[in-house]
Length: 462
Image: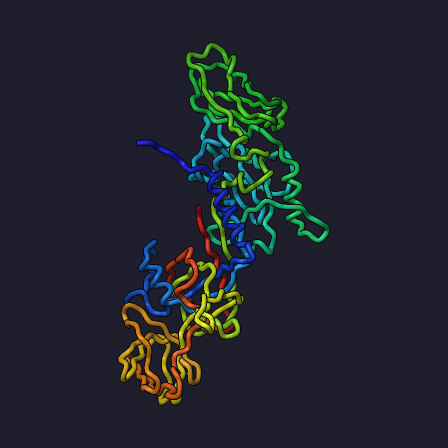
């Protein structure tokens, strides 16, 4: 059976096509929230599944939507931590290694690890010194033996939008001017200083045997100036580090292919074997030229922040348990019954509502109401004066209430009579059945209040 992989290049193409689609003025992307009713007796969110029924039920419970204008590529977030072991960058690593090869420090600065600290026996040592500073070009070492490459800083604005507990933003910085944030100017300098075809380090496949001295390390390839120093312990080569005899970091340039050759070292009985770590394929313009490549970014984050009631479009003193990403919802047919009109406002109310002529006792959100003649049931989401907002599910069943009928709560004391002079049903601002649902997440209940701002971050991994 054939075995195959999808490369990061095609993933990047897909991501760029999504970004282009989001930025197309003909498209409107929204974060949608919904489902006020409990999941189950313990109200623990279940796993979401990619099925038609799951999508249908999400649409039935939608409450509100808000447009998304902030989108950025993101990567897993790894905070530098004293006592942790970090992997060195390796072009042979699949995805993200168990021990991360990049970190973010306390100042929101991002670094790649080019060399892992090791003891004389070649065992990895923990990181004790947090990388700091914004050195534009060459890598730098810390006192604990690690070697780092500065990539970029995350600005305060980007941090509020795109930094979460599990992800952090990464971008390619375009042209800057005198009004640009310092972090953008700084990153552009790093990108400009990048050097093609560097060798960032060495991987030791076999330490050999019988070495009585440190062998000489030679990089054989089509580039220039890469050097390394080998160390031995117990007759074996235990590590190969990226510096010359003077202690300078010498990662060379212009390599598209290279091999590692050991010579000398006494009368060894078995030669050591190793390989060079190249930037050519993963970061073709050099480390720092495009940190999206350096950090293997294949995810997008959509961010929006509903504030309080959003002029009445979002419910307060109510909870929600689902979040979705909705593209191009519509408001329903036009007045002549023609094609549904695209919804383009910044926020929108999705729930249906009933108009009451009289209310005997106030209805209660989260209770179930029933019509005395129609026998139609619905779940109550919001109550305001003579209006009740609601939704229906597979449990309540579906249907329209009758004009002028009495409504009572099945599980409460609310009572009222619907307006008799016209249909009591009022549709939401958008038709919940329209638009492409691109993402769906089930969550534990989140309760909203008037002074609350939700920070909705939707991450799509390609």
